[in-house]
Image (cartoon, rainbow, N blue to C red; front, side, top):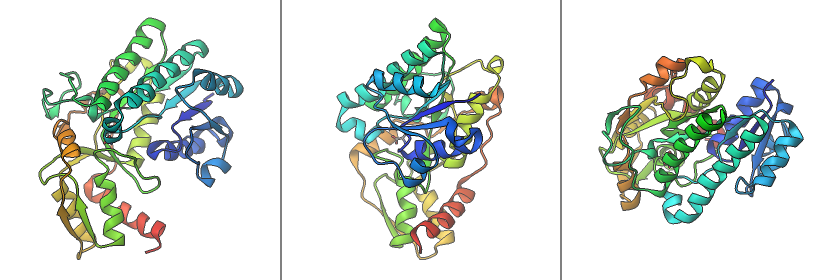
Length: 317
Ligand code: SER
């Protein structure tokens, strides 16, 4: 049976993943773990919520024992731009937090899902059709923690047999919980501003292509990989996964199709721009397709249509 802990359950992916897993495995079987930020009423009222700071190994252990957890979705992490603002904190949360989770998983025989990211690549990586196995020399602390995390997860599988699995997520687009301080956040902000103000100022330059994915596909990727037959996996951690790749002007055009008066201008942020330029334009995700049947549902037009429909309802506009 699946008895699950989600760390970072109050964050952008964690908040929706927790509800998705509760639907699938039963509310009582999915514990939402969060740190300081308040959980939504939905998250708190639909199943167990526990305060878990992943830098505190005892706190993780207590929850694993109390609920007899067998699977951990470890979503607690700092995103790229925030990590650049406080690299030491990013190391502590993203790496010391991860090794705590892996240690507890080793002790209690849990499977672990850990997201890596397009941020695990850098300027020396081939940025077009980025291969599954390639050069990874990221120039950000976020990227350093993501590559280290990929290696740690491989190590815990090889050395201790912990069932570690993971994907390299691209920018994730969603309408429930806003992302916090990522380089790809513009692709979420644009929808809020298009609906509220009819205009958006983009912090990335025209022509900056990045991989992206709509939340329903991101949730499906995590669960499909965790439920895949172990024998079919040649890679375990850090599968490239993508659903679409676009530059700011491409999403602008898509939003305009639905909101014709929408306008966009640019005020480029050098930090975000330099990070984005060191990440892939688009990744080759054929290993995920071959090994566990990865198949996204939403492309740019389908995602934009659904985002605008759902956000209009959420914002009452
Ligand atoms: N969305 C993330 C970020 O921009 C990428 O993994 O930091």
